[in-house]
Image (tube, rainbow, N blue to C red; front, top):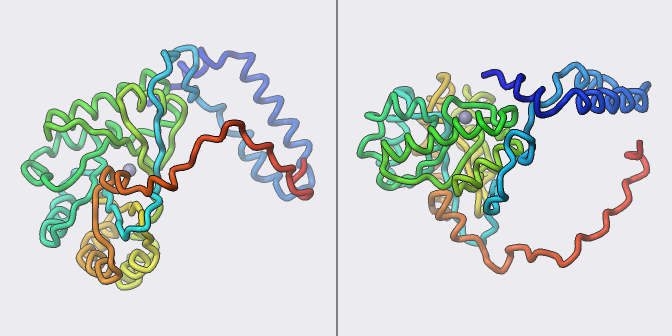
Length: 291
Ligand SMILES: [Zn+2]
């Protein structure tokens, strides 16, 4: 999906010139330093498409506050299993079978277009699970205009309602990439944003199922949101096959399983940060970081 046309209109040539000028200035400052390669790489990329929530084509009345959660602060040994990118024949039914056998709830962040096409795979099987929005076609929301982000998220929201009869309340942006328009559209749909704090290392450890399980079991903490996938390469199947071992290992450490929304409800209220009356002054940068 190409949003470049919208980006040029709302960003404006003046803004593009400013960005280019800043890039050259930064490159000059860094000349001879360790950051040159990275800075040149950045300059070659297109200017970002409009991601601001208040860009010209997207300005709306401010919506509700959107929370972004990647783990929850709690003393209770709770963990939320999450599965992204389904449903697909490979490997959604296998994941559902394992969760059913262990009586474990999970949260599935579904791709709308796949949910519509493969609704039969989840029909009658989501009773204990939560469903979240993972966009219509696994879209990179950080690059989408408000109009495109709205369409992607809204179509998926409607598909979830049509297939499951439920209103989703959580959005997980594919790859964890989000921009201002993502937040705007999330607010318009009453969503909060759910990222993750622990990833099943199905690629790196695909040849070592035991290590893959240990990496999850050993690194889980109270309040962890664990990211797995129920779609993809055979390495993903390895991870799905190890689900019973992960679940039993975590239970062995005293963990219980909840959905992401249940995990959030278990957040320790005493540790919810109070909003400071005035922002604390910024600390000066360390000497070596000064540019
Ligand atoms: Zn994804």
